[in-house]
Length: 460
Image (tube, rainbow, N blue to C red):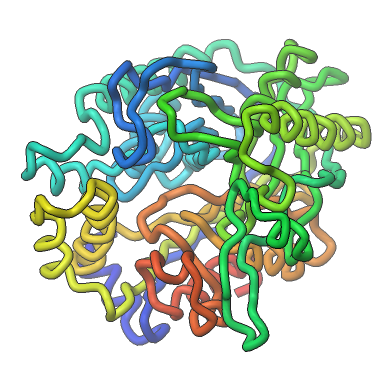
């Protein structure tokens, strides 16, 4: 869709945000096949981690991976991929999807790429990189040459997987609670506004004693079978996945490590982990930030995976559908690209106050240019749906999707296109807090994302 067409179709639909075309395709479920792929996405020594404002790569504790699947036989190929990176934003996300699409022989709108969001990992935005590159004293956000090589590796990995696709006959769904990992990190004061944040780790006993708050306690699993054999299991859970970070030790952290242990326990089945809508959810209630807590949190996620896997009951695949919806949420009026560029150019500012704002400018520039839009997508098999959502969406969107999809098994994978950064609900904006302070969109994002979710579920 051209920029002009997108804007014409979107104009006047929602104040502060626009929504473009959507599509729903029902495909005959005949002669389905499934291929799996994985490739290494570990950054080289010295590469920036989390955008350049923490210690860069010193050592690799555990390599980072991109793991995915390709569904063949339901129209053009469908690709799902989970990447052990902090994020892929704006054109970096677009280019990643294009590369995997080329490998699978499909179109980018039939590719969903989501990040797991550990922080000792790359936070890739090619557009923000162009901005900081104007200031040689700043650390690179992403090594552009490394990123380009990675795209070629990913494209080749997908293409090499296709000839080894296996018949896809059954799916199964289940969910199980994860205990003592997730808690809402926005702590409200007597006036109802956010008084403080309980982050990914917290050493304050008073904050850790605060109630767990709003979360989704369940880990959901959607598994794919070839006859009687389970060949892929996708796991979904909403929580910031950081136990500790910032010392240059590359790791997929406790969620990625749990996936790895389950993979070792069941080598014949490819396991993928997708982070749900955890923008306002973290482990701080249960995590004091010491290295000893990483394996504890890992094992709690692993227990949830294993409990969910034990409840799976395969059923023949009767229907396959793929849905998409394009959105472009409007930026908040408080952000001025010109003012932020001056801040980035100010050499007296610390790196975090220069590199991070480059992500803001990248989003503002994208909105000013009218796109490209964010592509939301949904995969629907029998009575199950998995929705692929952007950025650091609040947990309310995941719970809302499950409520809207009454009668269906709904799983959410967030941390897709990270351009908007945080995506709070409209009710959260007047309450303040860290997440609202770094949300590039205005409150209109709630209406547009909610309508997008409805369209993905064929409800609007």
